[in-house]
Length: 211
Image (tube, rainbow, N blue to C red):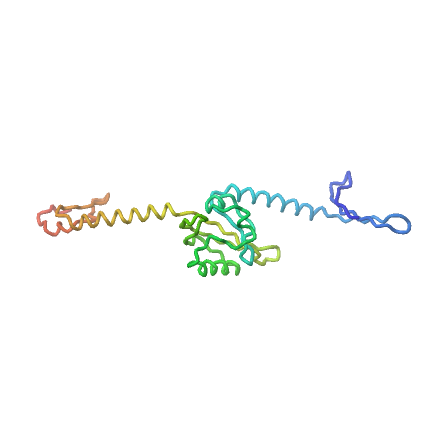
């Protein structure tokens, strides 16, 4: 029989093994204080990491070397509409088929120890919606320094991309109007320098000169 316990008043932890023998009972004590502290520290760290993952606003998943989902946070479930039971132990389901080889290439690079940051791609939700995502892939190494998993953090940038596209279309529409109007349109910067002038400017010869 083997147990772990303290022997008071000593603050140390011991692994106590008991074996029957001819005179009666043999007891062996092994000081495991340091390893117990390390295990306790790892357990506390693990709790903190789990708490951070659950509270994070961005979707976070961990993938094994076989690219199987092992851990994920609440934000991932809420963003993509899956349940935990549908995902754990399975490949990542959010990769569009036309982007699969590209994303799997990124994952293989990460397994080789490379960190990839702010990679923009598209991801599929359970209901078929397509999101614009920015991905950061980080290799996770064990005590042996070998990469044993991948931490993938995603950020939904769909709204940012939509606003950027709306701004581009608005600017394009404004430019088309300005290019085809007969009215004179001039845009100045804060230093009173001309940044844009519509075509009718070329027909004006009496504009005051800038000193």
